[in-house]
Image 1 (cartoon, rainbow, N blue to C red):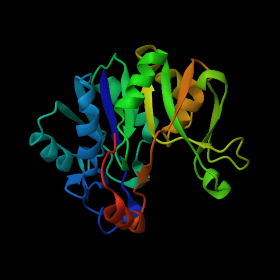
Image 2: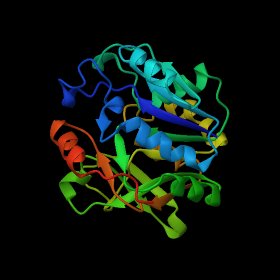
Image 3: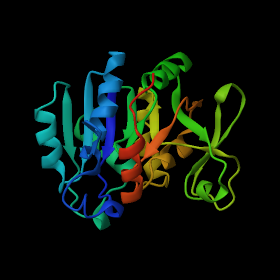
Length: 245
């Protein structure tokens, strides 16, 4: 099993902090955002490689960080150098699959969130289900729903549909950017892109995938801290206390 970290964005809403530095390597407390995520995931003992997908502008920062790390980390430079020329999350996933000849189960996560619960719980859930999986959490605010990925879930957590930024949300289930894809579904990503799947947001892939494979949805067992702008970063710095379990 491999863990793929989506980190090729330019985080323009965090300027000037991220004008020349990648958001996932910003510090939250004593660790970088990425270190909080990877140190936790590695406790499951199932990952044989961590793949950080970066743009060309920030790749050297990730490479320097990886050199000082004890984990097996591979930095994949997607070659883009501006927000306007970015590939988009789904194309970045396929880029890494092709470049690194990946044929394995993949845990795919965004590299700009911290959590107060262990992602190993999600990995165990996915292995128990034996399918591709995602997570969900209840969002009461309808305005936030229209700016998020929103899912419909049936019996036994089966994902029925997922829609990015819906004008009329069909539920209150929001979908954070944490996914587990079975090897056989990773092989379908190229078909999804060819079929017109949206490529900017990673949730567009699971929206396509649930129409072609069984996908289950685990209710998030804790809180996610999304670092999207300077104010949210300041708030996380003040309130985040690490993983509870």
